[in-house]
Image (cartoon, rainbow over all chains, first blue to last red):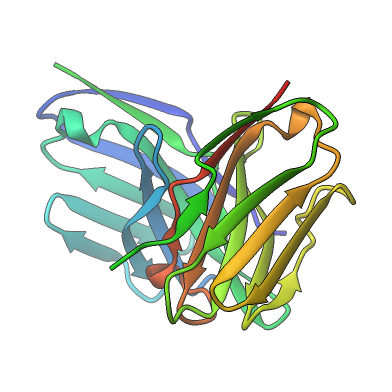
Length: 113
Length: 115
């Protein structure tokens, strides 16, 4: 079945890089995603990567995909206090002819001075 | 542009009462999703609709939960009777196509507490 796993917590110093890791099970996932949830808010799509890519860079964000190991990571360069949030990894699952998103439990990123 | 609009934002109710959560998807979106978020289980997909038709409701926990989408601009998630274990944040999300994540937009959530 479909399953997405992430570590639950990460603490980094302001200005350092953060790396959030995720493993998934569905090798047929077309897209893999990173969402960000700030306190009291909904989920905001940060970035996504197509399954035939190994890397995608978008400003301070770098996504790495290792399809062989089914491993996805999100690197945030020069982490700021505003990056403190929960980060969710998600893969696409296919059901009834339609795609749906399967989320991990989320990694809580704490940025300290 | 208005995003996905959910109401109420916060609700506190007593066990046994009926709870109705409402969602207005983004205009022009044809897929709508209801998710539940708890500390214990994370984000769970409860049900999703495409063109107002329920496609997959396998995530609906039990018969106390029901969801409807009478038209393209409105959906409800109802819990009757409510129980303390239903306390969670309920998110509605919508997308334009069949649900590839780059087009899924989430509402701010309805924070439900059942006492």
